[in-house]
Image (cartoon, each protein chain N blue to C red):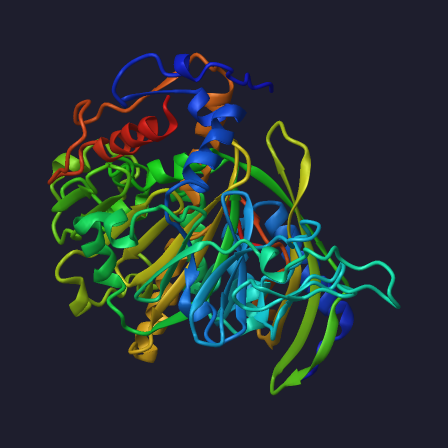
Length: 414
Length: 156
């Protein structure tokens, strides 16, 4: 398979609007390189983890923003830093463990030694050995710190940005999306339940599209449509920030079924019953304030999931135009009873790379990517509910995807 | 209880692998006790004591639900599995149960594709003798693989 690389960004997307998406948007290496530069390394906030993953001073986790490796570390004052995992000397990605606890960060190659803020503490033989060699007289430790990113922490969730000009995180989300963020993350102490990691052979935006697409869950996902967890007759709300880059899909599980939304839907199984009914032992929680599901996409790299009692963050780490790593971090609250913790973990069977709902999302993304790669002249159709971008009080629309691509075209100048 | 011999334990694993590799998924729950635990767990969670599993099933009913889900509800590319299971290491006994660990390697072959290493790790099992022969009271599939290649559909 060969993929052409554009040398003329102006001709990639000839039409106006954002309802027909050309195949190269998903496949072209030059477009992908511009995405890394303008989106992942540009003035955007990228999710990097939860504060509970680095509970004490010196605790760190390694992750990535775009394709750049970063270290999330808590300093002695308890503040969170996000440092680029690249020694200032010879570019070594010196941190190879995924998590741990350290007094200082040491690059093993030449033992350059950094503190938790990324400041260089010392280098061996700076003044030479027996009067010979050493660094030049104008060498200053402070000129050789680790690249320290801009950091935003809100109610236990950590974001980083390579841009120091990016707007404050709260403004970045905008009030409507921020309200959904705060609904789950209201400052309560969180508890880490664990990770699932998968590599999905598709363009990273296809996962953002998947969680901005309320059309498919009640069609593709038998478990959603049969048990009413996501279905077109559910009362629902789709909201965006002013740019259309972030979105929330909010809905309430139906107790009754409108035959209009299951007729002819082959994934609906009227007589399906479970041997282990505890999988759907759903307990309403006060903080939901009604909706049983809220899926939030924060551009460019994270999805926040509340689907009944199951909670996770889903981080996107692109690896080339045709694949991304998808990291699920499941969590609960410190105030949860043991029964609620067990329930959250049990409901996680629906999600993740082996999930009875989510496994086929990865599969359809793979096959979409295959389709885009076989013909660069193709354009995806995204016109359910019209061609415009607007909030919606129903789910029979692809408006959120159009919103993302309207913003994408602005940022990418494509 | 008469403790089973190593030949019986080896035969159990051989039958288990054959059942999965021949895609006789409806027979798979028969390898387990009625109140079994079956979990597929990333090694990083297991080592850190984190409770999340990629798949976590309780009781034979949970296994039957998973089989229904896999065979009747999930959309996925079809693939063959080939289990290579090491000789069992009997670690000890706990009451009526034998504690057995084995390494496993699962190869995946999708239609029109080359074969690939899909998932590798170790089984941490509790095996009990029942009237119907040896059964797994617990099977933990703790996998080293840092990334699942897209999705994990069939039982391991």
